[in-house]
Image (cartoon, rainbow, N blue to C red):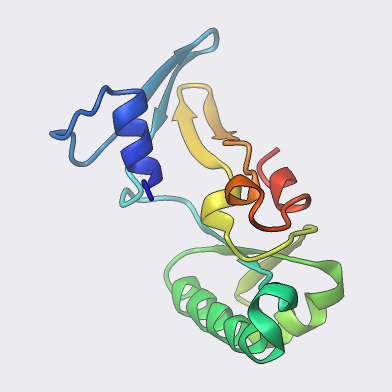
Amino acid sequence: MQSRRGFIKTTILGGATTLLPLQIQIASASGVWLMPDEGDRHAATWMAFGPSEAIWGRRLAAAAQDNLASIAQAIAEFEPVNMLVRQAEYETAARKCGPKVKLVVQDIDDLWIRDNGPVFVKSGAGMGGVNFNFNGWGNKQTHAADAKVAV
């Protein structure tokens, strides 16, 4: 399976392998947009508190929530963390994540924010997000709500 970075290198950059760290510039009617390297400094981390019990099972879903909360708390010591959470799980997320993690109510199917969330880009005009039209990895997983995360 190819990573986003690999996909971009092979489709947009024609397989260039010497671009490390990779920064992509895309020209549009509103100017040039830059997709920073994922290791560059950034304003915040986005996560999703959404392991699906149908996929993870009850025991693993609860453990995944605990681990997501621990990761979010550790990151929140150094930068803002925004955590997407279903309305029904808001109180659980608030209890597990603590006050330093900002909870954002959003209908989600699962926790894969790196796959279904936007890719943030910057220009002289500000910041934007690119939607890669998440399809549940070729319709292998329920994704109706996840497909709307980056919209």
